[in-house]
Amino acid sequence: MVQILVKSCQDGWVCVRNCGMQRTALTLLATGFLATGLAACGDGGSSGGSILPPPQGPTVSFINAPTSVRVGTSTPAFTVQVSVPGGARPTQFLELETFNPSGVRVQREFFSPQQAGCNPGATFCSFSTDFRVALGDPIGVWQFRITAFDQQNRSGSQTLLITAFQ
Image 1 (cartoon, rainbow, N blue to C red):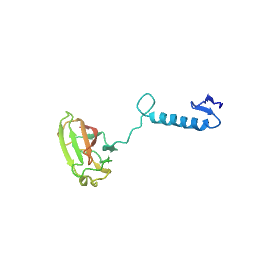
Image 2: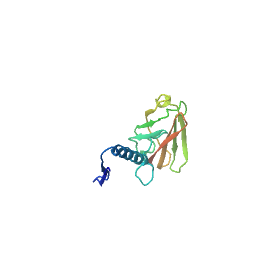
Image 3: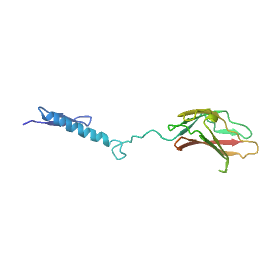
Image 4: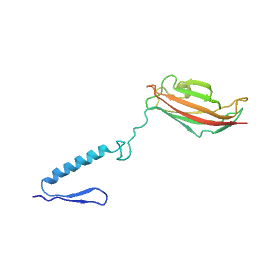
């Protein structure tokens, strides 16, 4: 008769001492339990965290973006970075929208990749822009939103809040 000694280890694993042919069978059984346990990891249940796939749609990021502007002037130029895993759409790649402090859209423009200095199908694009509040426009918080579209017509956007002052 083969004797199997099982004891708890400090790190929570189970230590097994075995001899003879049953050691192989036990190792295979333990490996199966370990594989089953690993497969259950990240299932979103109470077992722990989740494994998230990378974003599939475009993402837009502002680098060193301003937060305020004097009415009648432009902000300093800032960088916009667009990651497009599905490739940049050849037409109407970027949509730029501006909303005044009342929430009314006052500007909406579309740009091709070439107009933004990018290549059609590119998976990453970076360009500079600024934001201007004209004389006579209201003071308050303006919204500047950039939306990017990929070849599968998925979109991602980022909104910048800019306070206009006198």
